[in-house]
Length: 153
Length: 427
Image 1 (cartoon, one colour):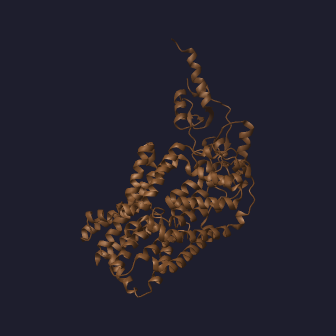
Image 2 (cartoon, one colour):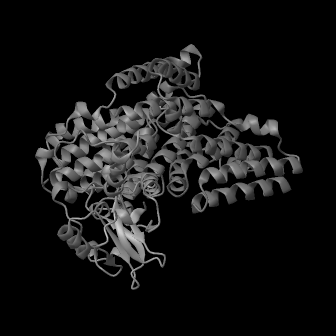
Image 3 (tube, rainbow over the protein chains, first blue to last red):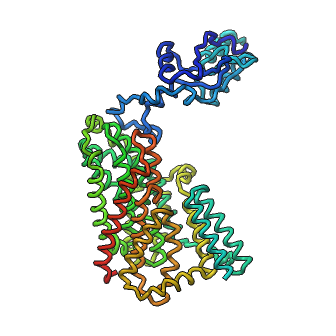
């Protein structure tokens, strides 16, 4: 069984020229965690996760401190929004390099890759490197676990 | 003659490289040291044994011992705890918070090196100022400036002081008698000036005072048991610093013994703890010692001393005050450690030529300590707060520093010069 058995074929992606603000709108509307960024030929050139967008609002001190457990109220930080200047930039400016797998990739290998690269989602590409689907850890994990029921003694 | 020229060119080249920041200063120092020994061997002015003798292990031991103690204290969250307490005590008044955080930073920097103080206090400062909804910039600038200032007060507060104390055989108490009282006045002057320079920012009304009252100090202290143990050892070390001269033990032995006791008592994850030791600083020092040792052996220092001796008719008070300002100006541009290491043999040489050099050591300490406040690159603490501030909405630029740090440097040098002149005959 390969990755096509569990991938979402109806994959939402954005063109590299789309603004961060418009990408946020897609995240809200589609309720998804990752947006592959594609060029004119639908080839993925990067990825933008919901976390990459939230990082624009998250205060810098969170990364400097080992924990913020002693903070019980974020006060003024709770209501800061990224400036419009930032939101109007294209997704290309904040996207991360795309890590993709091809359609013939096995399920367990796909899971191992996600684990090692700390990815929640993996875009799937065709032999011609075009975006054809996307899988989440839950998609892959549930598909693998489903085979356990058929396991022989 | 050729050896004086070659060794001077090498040293000045290394200083220029350190200033340019093209290569990490530690790499420059170790490469420069290796070259100095190599050239010294060829030209016959320097040797391996000479290079080893040039390294001041007393300085390295004291720095290393203190680094171990602080590396153990760091993960306990003690510094965070102090800042959270200050935040609550300020009840949300920016001015009160400014004074409290500034004072805590100064006191910490008297016992801990400035960089570490700032590294530990600045992140939680950003947190506090952002959750109450005011700019972190005034607090961060003040913390760097005040830690540089406070460090001058004690033998262990600042690397130049460690170097001077070791070279001139000055005790912890000597610093408490001669430097500490002057630093108190200088510090008060700096704090008042900073309060004035930041009057606009500090008069802004905080948006959310409630948030800092909900910070939980006890939760900010991660390992209270370890923190208590290390603080007891640190307190014991400070007690022994007071009497090290009477007991005829060097400050390095006090610091290293304290580190050993704390290690035995707390038994931290040694691997993790040693990762927090600033090895690059220790290697930087060792490299500079070897380079300056080469300069001495090549006769460069004698040459400089003979030039200075010609000015020995100048009033010694004027000479000392001049030294404060020249060293301060140099320290504002280059790291104050190489300057101090290079000037120590010069001052010693002046002493051998019959000058009363004991006041000059204090002039060197004040100049090296306060000079770093002048520019954004003048001291490592400045660079650290500037870097951290880049992740806030009000980054610290050199323009901001020139308007806030430079006046503080000028005022601190002025106050210390005046007090230096008043107390000159007792120094």
